[in-house]
Length: 352
Image 1: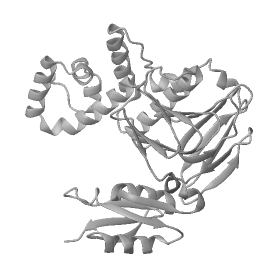
Image 2: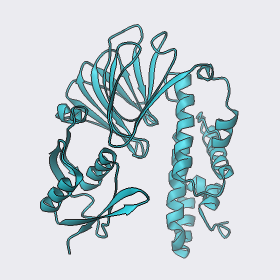
Image 3: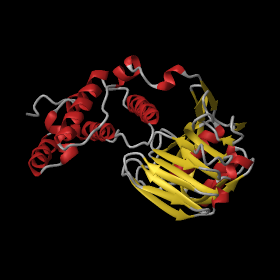
Image 4: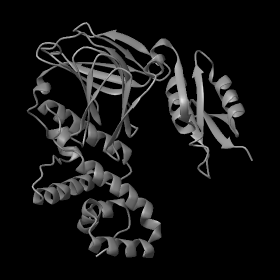
């Protein structure tokens, strides 16, 4: 049964492993528990394969708009392929997606599961194929502000991309987002405004809000400053209506959606040149600093305590050396810098 499994390709192509991941029956659980006891060196490959299978399984037709589903499907396959690009062949992804399609069809569910290769090279028929798109990208360490065709204003944070059709504001107002953006949307009840990311959607009439949805992170966040928005997580039919002061956080991995009351002015301070951290773990602080200063930060944390250490402070124009000096005073850590492929890399270590 499992004798020929040697790498992630083999896990993805194995029917019984797919059944184990998706249905976790007692029979398969016993088999694979025994397998991993005999082959502990393959556990890491198996974990990565599980993530791919679950991501493929989550690509369901949950959006209200056909074109959005087509965009999201393409985007998700692109992201999956980028994340796991060391897999030997695209055909492995195709095999896994076909198995998932067959599996859920038995349960009476409809799951869109098309191979990355087929989708990118052969998909036709979307009305967006005949339209032109405006695409704006803001690189690391920069911010930008733009005005959309409907008069809405958008502030774009570092490493953020937005895309919208030439038909924007005619019959629909759909904007695709990867990264973080603050919106002040012009009201129009006849043509609602929709922000689409690969993991969630935000439905708007006229309001001020922030969306943080970087494609390399599991979470999508939305904070409402004024007005009303509806937040929908991809992979779940749960829709949450936010009121001013609310912040929604959706974890695409666990499919959990949490809403809390926050200081939303702190959430959107970045557009005015400030970054506010409130009990933020070091791992999150470093991701933000990487985008803000266009550097690479590696946390050497063998015991796991440093990553989760919370920090509360505000950045407003300080250079990164001053920030690391502060971090070193606020927590038991030290850092060193080095040049790595034309980019400065900072290594953070716990104090001995």
